[in-house]
Structure formats: C-alpha cells, structure tokens
Length: 203
Image 1: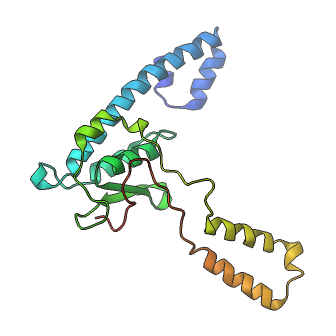
Image 2 (image 1 turned 135 degrees about the vertical axis):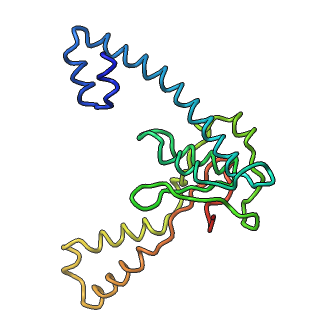
Image 3 (image 1 turned 30 degrees about the vertical axis):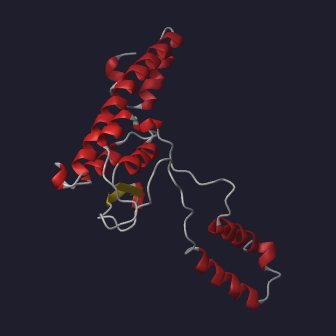
C-alpha cells in the first residue's frame, strides 16, 4: 500500500487500494504489520504521556502543578475505538484524576480534593509499571438489578398502542407521571478494578 494512501486516514481510500492491488492478500498483510508496529509505538506514547499527566496533577509541594487539564486533553485525543475507558480507570487507580464522558461525548473531569472520599497520594511510579491497557474497564454487574432499566422496560411495554387502548384515564395519567420520574433514576455504579470512588465534586 502506498504510504500516502495510508496517511490520509480515509478508510474508503485504503479499502480501494486493497481492491486495486495485484495481490490483495499481500497488501492486507502489509497493513497488518504496519498496524502492529504502529499500535505498540502509540501505546507506549500514550502510556508515557498519561504518566506525565499524573505528575502534572500532583500537588505543588510534591513538585506537581495541581492540573488535570493534560489528562482530560489526553482522554479527548484518544483514537476512536481505543481503550479510553481503560485509561480512565487507570487514572482513577493511580491518581486523584477523575474523568467521565460529558455532553456530546466529550471527556471532562477534575481532581479530587484532600477532604474528599477516595483521595490519596498519587502513585506515578506504580502507574508507569502497570500499563493503562492492563487495567480493566469500569463495568456494571450484568446480574445487578438496575432500577432505571427495569422502569424503562415497564414503560415501553405499557406505552404500546395495544396496551394504551385498554387503560383508563387515571392509568394514563399515572403512566405519564411514571415517565417523568423514570428519567431521574440513578445511573448504575460501575467500579473499575483497583479504582477509588467515582468523581464527586472534583475540581
């Protein structure tokens, strides 16, 4: 594959180059080798940058800058389909950086304050020794009873035309009230492995 085609980051152009190749198998194998080599380099760069972000987040008396912005910027710079959630869990495990996906899918966050639950001294050396991709992403127990999801299922079933037609006016009013309450249902708690408490009023 021509280097300039790969550098376009245009999936259609890359696919077309495969189809136009005299040996598609060889062209794909070449791309796989490039992905493997580039992926290892990118992981190393991301990991070193993330450790640097932890140093930046540390208090001034620990030679840091009390600044979470580099970590947040790194989260938003992560390639699509990459292990951003694992990186978020890694930050939480080894520092006081707390990040979450905000509006429009943009990562946001801040630093836990000393008086907040979960605050402890950052561990950049330990973080460097444990690559971010080896930390398990935050997950919700699939067997857990999640109130919001159960309410959503009930409302969806009740809102079907065939069910609505048999409801009394009083039942319809109750369903509307239930819909208004359901949107306020708390989100299920996802706890990353080795992580502290979730972001709460971090600055």
